[in-house]
Length: 285
Image 1 (cartoon, rainbow, N blue to C red):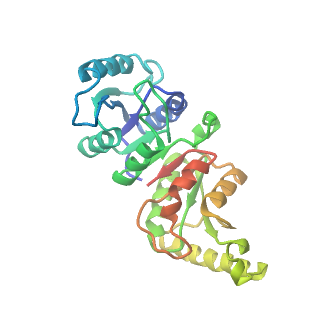
Image 2: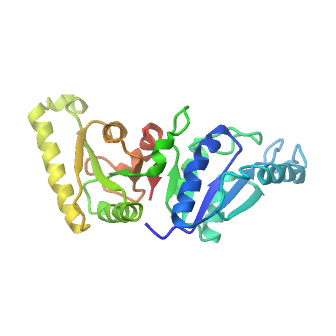
């Protein structure tokens, strides 16, 4: 993980953003990082973007600025905070800001509902995950508030594939754990016997898949110069990651967003499922 000195926190004044604040503040304090609060309001148009706005865009922007200046005024004590209000397409403005302002980490909930339409919907988060090249922290996609016990980040679970692409992910996860003083555990999913009924796979074959995957991941771990516990579960990737995170009381799940091979399923294609189902925050690197 790179040295985190600038955190971008997109907000839409929703309850989901409120529950993420303690995590953003804790991450900033641990790293001595500056936090930029950014709120992007979408102008209201009739007949598409080529038509005239229904409301004066300057009035919308002024409204956002007032809210932004009066939001989270005491929650970031001891942290340097900048506040940026914009008009535009939220995902594009967020990713452009990341590229232009040396942001090291984006922290955002998976969705939210604010007074200026739906600014942090899953589609916005998906675009930010797809278009930015810095790590993105996302709060668990549940109706409940994020569990504050995860603030300590003592136990970290890293979801890996069985290709060499996972070596760098392991190294980055191990580096973060070293900085945080956290324990690292790896998790990988293999197909369950129910997944391929036409093969009439039995339990013995499933166990062979597990062992082959475990040996491969152990070798990848040696290449990454780490030696940590490895969990290999059978089932869908999101389900296995969730089960292992719950079983081991994980405070954070780390996943990669790089291009992975098709072997045993592409972990990247399951990233949104992992985020939606994780019982704790997820860091996509």
